[in-house]
View: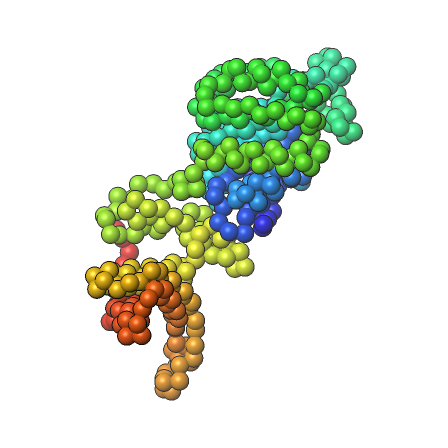
Length: 406
């Protein structure tokens, strides 16, 4: 697992601090995690669920809302609507720099926020709520006796989880005015509602309200014996395992990045920028994939690097050519394995060349042939390998023409 600290502008331009965690190999898809009210991205439930999802191949971005944790801004000037806008900004950051999120996960009020934001995040296909209230006004109950003071005086200091926060009347007004029912009814995305029957902070009745209001596909999973914050590690891991298994029906790694229609002809390849770093979107006919560089040189390993794709072209062509010849000649060839490596060697046959030109590029290819083959057949198949079209292209009189498009 790898992780990257990221910063991006929030709803009011303040810098939001996030943590992007992703698997060592290419991620199947990307998820966006919204933490609970007045919490932060590093709360145990958020970190444990995120890491468990990463272990299952899903990259996760979690961040601090405006005015919380390491994010800039004044918490007193935020409300539920601004949290929703921060989520939309986070999704935009992922789309611009990595891969647009297909999975939205929200814990407690963060769950209510992802329901409100999902409609504006076009890439999202699946939404998960954990211990979420059915309306943002529910959180106002945590203010207790301070609610009257806030409405009377305009603001008050409220103790939440052992920390003091300045809450303004605008927060209550915004929570009261925000309706989630219509957003849930018109979600048009897969919905998974997770809730503990023992949750003392948000009653499971809230989950029932959300479930009844949602349209299919919708699912409910009971987090039996868990508390609201999922403080028990096993509860967080169970939630993550369930989310990953459930989301697999609705998110698709091959569709985890979008590209505009290129209008290119069959047989041509189009390459566009996926982010402003090394990741590139590659389109050929009906096939789309990502190319990237290793993390060691600043990439995110979202796909094979350019040299790996070059080796893949030679390797696949080699294997195809050998198979086609063996089938035509009725040679009993059970299997073919081709292993390739790109090397740079100093050539000894260019004494008069400049130093840079003396570096000989070598594509080392090792072929394993399995089957009841004679020595003569093996030698012949080895000769055929050198006749594959890609091999001939690379070793022939190759010229690359470059021009600017109009």
